[in-house]
Amino acid sequence: MLQEYKRILVAVDGSQEAEKAFRKAVEVAKRNNASLVLAHVIDTRAYQSFSTFDGSLADNAREEAKNILEEYKEYAKKEGLSEVEVVLEFGSPKVIIAKQIPESENIDLIMLGATGLNAVERIFVGSVSEYVIRHARCDVMVVRTDLKNETIK
Image (cartoon, rainbow, N blue to C red):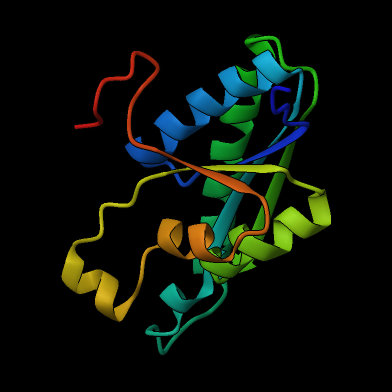
């Protein structure tokens, strides 16, 4: 029996790696006649270093994220997907992508781009993809290639 996915989560952040994961997620969703959930998580830790945080930074990040999500949603719809949802959250991307969204949205496959963190950064920070692989309760696909299966440069 072939595995069929019904609800696919793809994490997007505007990076090249996330773009590749998104495009592959659209194709996987089409093949499986699945719903696609586009998620962007604004990492609140990024704002902890600003002593004069006035809310405008978060507002700017939210607007930029909404624009990214809307562009991806339009593309997915043009590619023939009828069920495309967007989720915008604030918090820890690792936890929200691995646990919170999959649970609340009944996700059975998470797709995300491979991170660009080097070994030293992973020791201190840890990559989102590494955390998701270890903690998600559903299947996880880390995308390293484009639609032609060529390595991301």
